[in-house]
Amino acid sequence: HRGHRHVMDTLNNLSDANNCLATCVTFRNHPATLLRQGASVDLITSLSQRKALLKDAGLDLIVDVEFTMEMSLLSPRQFLDVLRTELRMKGLVVGPDFAMGHNREGTVDVLRKLSMEMKFELIVIDPLVFLGKPIKSHLIRENLRDGKVKSASDMLGRNFSMVCPVTHGDGLGKKLGFPTANLDIQNNQLIPKNGIYATWTKVDGQFYKSATSIGVRPTFGTGQLQVEIFLLDFEGDLYGKTLMLEFQSYVREEIAFPSQSSLVCQMNKDVDRVRILLSDDGRGK
Image 1 (tube, rainbow, N blue to C red):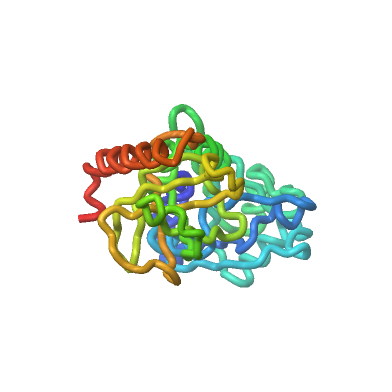
Image 2: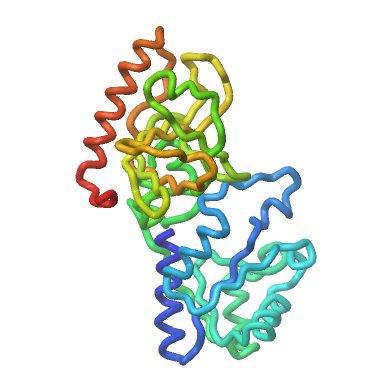
């Protein structure tokens, strides 16, 4: 998100000034899933998305490691020793609430003392603020769970997106006149609040306007959560493809309709609304 980008911009500038490689260490798995029994963390980005975003941020080296129980027991000094030995770390750029090592004992104050003892530069930067609050991953998750995709995207610095393969559905959308692509949601992928969204869908390198439904189809009482995409002005077979879905605007809540015909009438209105909401965005041009 933009807060991370703020840290990386500082890292890039300092690495250039000191003739060093700008390096990011990221965990393949979220530490909480290992340290808290039964914990599940909804991911804003997959590992592949995260690495692509880090590369776009201009970093020279991205190191992804598996967070293990053995790693969780390392003291802050031991963790820093690993960074110095394996990556020849000369400096560390962090935010004010950063912490590392066993039980998060390596707070900024602890790191300041260790940086003087271990002879590396520590740079602590102020957080980036959005609407009076520091930009944090948990705040972005809250906004997405509330359907506030625009606010979430403002904090991300990009549209919130999901990259998922297309799976076979039951063909109901096609029967209603709106053939949809059903996404196979990946493990721990954060899914926004149920409802209808104006979205962009990337297929084979090209973006298409799309209306996306997240929900349980209450009109038909199926009860299973699904993410279904109707691509506007698209012809072709999507089965077997992996799509990137970008959320731009929340259109309406998911509701049960009294009849199939009233649902189809609303779906036509939804598509018209999506066209309007996406008309000023040149992404598909």
